[in-house]
Amino acid sequence: MNLTENILPSSIAPATLLLPGPDLFGVRAARLRHLAHGHGLAPWLNGLADVCDAQQMALNTLPALIGLPSGDAAGPPLAGHQAAALWQALPAVVHQLFTASRGLTIPPAREPGAEALQRMAQDGLKMAVGEVATGQRDAASILVAAALQVVWTAAARTIALSAMTPLQDLAPCPCCGSAPVGAVVMAGEGKGGLRYLECSLCATRWNAVRARCTLCEEGSVVQYLGLEGASGAVQAEACDHCGGYIKTFFQDKDIQIDPLADDLGSLTLDILVGEQGYARAAPNLFLQAAEPVRDMTRD
Image (tube, rainbow, N blue to C red; front, side, top):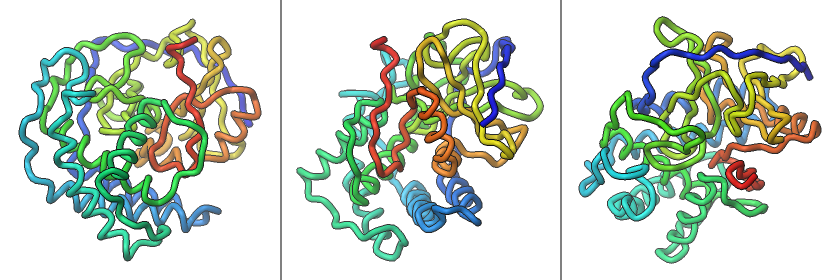
């Protein structure tokens, strides 16, 4: 493992929000298949790619969501009781994903009844904000979480928050209130070097200044932990002050990188960073082992 210290520059007036694209899940499926080549977890990654393909089909056929809150609602507009229209749309998407899963390479799962669906969906939303107990999740729970992503992503695209929405320090996703799955340092003209956190639920990205720890904002020196011999596209940003880490994905090392997919493809890094004494601070709704995510707001 490499250990380097970086003094990170700050950015001036970037767009605060980047909304998910219409082909989000299809692009993610392709990335998972790319990562599966020669990977020890190839069957699992390819199975999740199939799930993402089903998510894309569901997103493409999801009717227009009605009754959504306006983008100027107090707090994240897709969080809590304000998301009633999303709950109404969820059962149909769950049914579509479970129907598609019969031919997928993930373990078969029985579609839950209304009561079980409600419980699994609530657990998925808790996981998205980091409130999850240790335990093994089954295929049904992961498919329900995948359906949550479809519905909340569609809603994020529908309400279309302003690209310059004001952000608060250490705030969760400004669209749905969930925690980030990771951070992306952008490449390309006009965005090069800017860091965005990507929501684990609705895939909205919001800007995070690169001059302090993403988790506790302490100081301007962060440690990057990466795997020996790797490209450097995936690194763990670790903080000695709060003891947490979040993965950071660098587009200048790999322009096709996807935070959710590349997080799953780099679980060896989590093991090594955990051995260094740091706690993971980012949920991934496709992880089968629901390990606790450290809640930095309680420190």
